[in-house]
Each structure stands twice: as structure tokens, then as C-alpha cells.
Length: 107
Image (cartoon, rainbow, N blue to C red; front, side):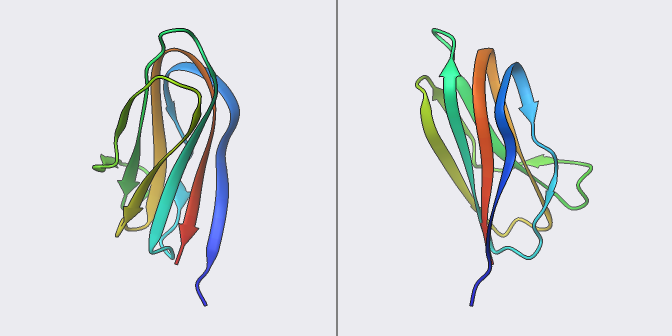
């Protein structure tokens, strides 16, 4: 039977600029889905996010998971497989937004 775990990385976090989640060790998982829920955003905001991977939780590499030009509130996701041991989520917006971010892990 597979294991499944959902972790909330950032809950109702308001920011502008770059939000980097805490590193999350997930070496046991075979796949992950990153969710970004945008609760609110300033007018004309454009949001992007991407999943990063790391061998040690210290240095980071971008994956091909980037989602760009999000202009509406809602829930967005990106999937990744074969990622090694550590994950984090990077969300960017030049204007103020409020988000909750999650990883859903399965292995």
C-alpha cells in the first residue's frame, strides 16, 4: 500500500516579491503535486510559481514545473516525479497576494 501525505508549507501568507517555502524532505515519495491557492491579489497582479529540488536542502535547482502569468484567484498546481530528497516551492508576485501552499506526496 502506498503512503500519502499532505503538508501545508505556507498558510494565509501575504507578501509581494518572492516567497520561498521551507525545505521539505520527501525522499520516500515517488511523486509530488505542489498546490498554490491564491486567496486574494491586488489588481493587475501576475503570479508565477515553480518547484525546486535539492540534494541536501541547502542548494536549489529549478525544475521544469514553472507556472506563469496567473492573473486570477484560485487553486493552481504543478506535478513532479523523480526529484531526489528535498523539495521547496517558490512563488513570485510583484504585487501583494495572499496564498496557502501545499505539497501532496505519494510513494
